[in-house]
Length: 211
Image 1: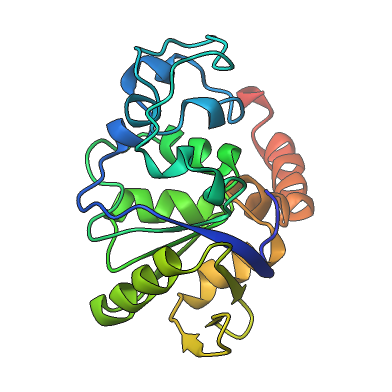
Image 2: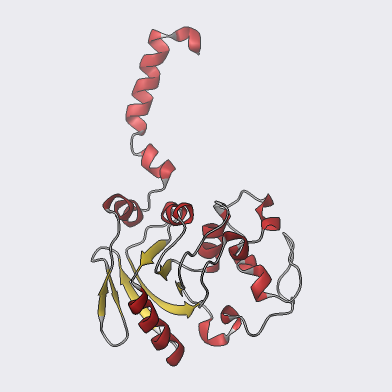
């Protein structure tokens, strides 16, 4: 998993509440268990005017020009600003896979669905929770300013706006440690590879019949 330390990223505003995981990555794309390749299908039913299918070339698909990510000013955004209860619905891990593959490393919202929130950390995405008033302020600034960028510092737990306003945020210390060091569940386990190997060798000696 790619470590997260600091990010200076363009912000895209998705002004919708209760965005569920089927909207983030529709069910037909769940056939693949690979973590990559989902970016072109992120928000598929909102981004395109036709029905998308796995493996489809999206180059010439008709775009919904009213959808925020299809606006040129938000091309290459790495920060997604959104509203309450983002990531609700089914627990599909494909949702953070699609967001990450598209290019988003940071999400900012007042609240998230619990399973989605946990899955973000496990896949290298930093989901930040801010109060509604601050979210409202950021939406106003983003929509009023082309090229609006935020600097996110995970170590300091701060967001810095273009006007140099510093906004603090909270994050669980263990999740912060994992993100800073690029550790998913497998990476955490492999930190104890030598102890695991020692245990397995001892187990083979004491209960050889198991092996």
